[in-house]
Length: 380
Image (tube, rainbow, N blue to C red; front, top):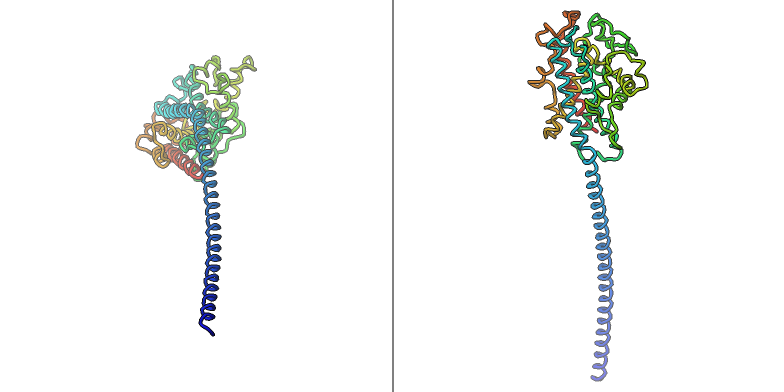
């Protein structure tokens, strides 16, 4: 083969190789470019999805912030005035309970003209009834507003509302407070259980029998009615009557006496009828005669101390619980209704019951009640 032919073949092969290499390079470039484009498209889609997701999250977070801001604003506008009133009423009720202990200790709940609850002037009796119902009525007003409010946004408000509810519940817990886990009450006269009749008798039984056979709490409906009668319409809003408004509404009617037919169908007469169960609870009250009622008051006193402490700035639940217990250094003296026992224990009951042990058990019952309440709040 001539040299020219060989050169031609070499040139042809070289051309073919160059063309093949060029084709391979082109194909590879196209494949790479296509993959790069697909990756770019996927990245763009991912970025778009991420951007949309972040935008949705931001919108949701903004909506949540806007909701919480408006809901908190409404919550504070509606409830904070009532919370302040609740704290004030709770402190007043606690002092009223302490005052009952003082009156017993000084002999001012003993039979006779000196008895503050039965004297010719009904002021003290009426003030006790009003003072014990007022914080429960404020709790009722708070509860009515909760259908339109989100209490989960503020644990402090939720805690105070919860504790106020326990004070409300305590008034109907007369049976519960005589049973386990609370220390049993030695009722005397061989009676081992609290067993009052369904309806209170017209006249109280003997002082010893009152300890177990006189109803010493209220039914839920009776509490609800007493609370409702304490509410006053002020324009379109309800509020709790002040003591002055309460006495004015009664128009001089004595809650301790039988219903007056002449007052039937009047505001004052209706108030007296509705408040009869509460008046019966207070009428003739003495911690020695009504040990179950005294336990109820100790349970409420622990609740009210919690609410008063919240007003002073204490917020942590455990700190509140510790400070709310009645077994503190000062509380036994504040709620000591016995003193030296000379003026406090009714003559008919002397030697019948270990009242010192009963008083200690009542304080312990108050502590157990508030401790159970805090456990319930922690799981609510």
